Image (cartoon, rainbow, N blue to C red; front, side):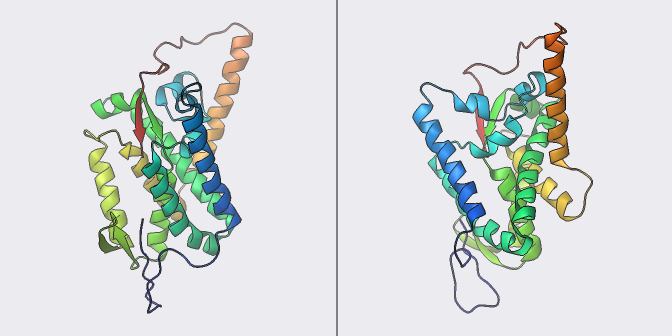
Length: 256
């Protein structure tokens, strides 16, 4: 996805040097396993229905696991290929700097936080929000863009091949990607959940700057609400119907 040029080297290398860490092996392997399972079971088990992020299902049916599992679902071979390339290229060096524990915390916080912001955005009274409400969002790009932002803050002047075509400093690439995501979120985005891209950037920035927004705490909140909902059902207390929760095969799929 990108070619890194270190200002301290005279040679050009594709990606970080050194062996692939166990953490990245597990993350990439899990994504690939989900991708293969989806391809093998698509005719019998609609995995994207259960594991992709559908805001309507999260809000109305408390399918909060989707805030995490959507990160492991992808919309095609190129989609997963570019995401995993970026995870390797930007994540490897950040893990070496931060250590495995904080790297994983940051990665999942950006991914879950992007999902939470996507759900919140879907509740707004805009046309783009209403279309997102019934859609299925898949992909790890929210977390990946959080890593890209962190990479840009540590190595702002390193060059990457933007869109695999022209070189650009990472700091400018992040600004350009964020601007495109923000603009596209309020228009016809061609099936790409740009608000999720933007959410990953926002959460990543807040974490790096010591913000008070904690996506994992939000996930815990939704989990507790889901448990309360189950307790209510045991006592035949139903706060509302499930109609319009986004079920069925007519969902739009959005990849990011």
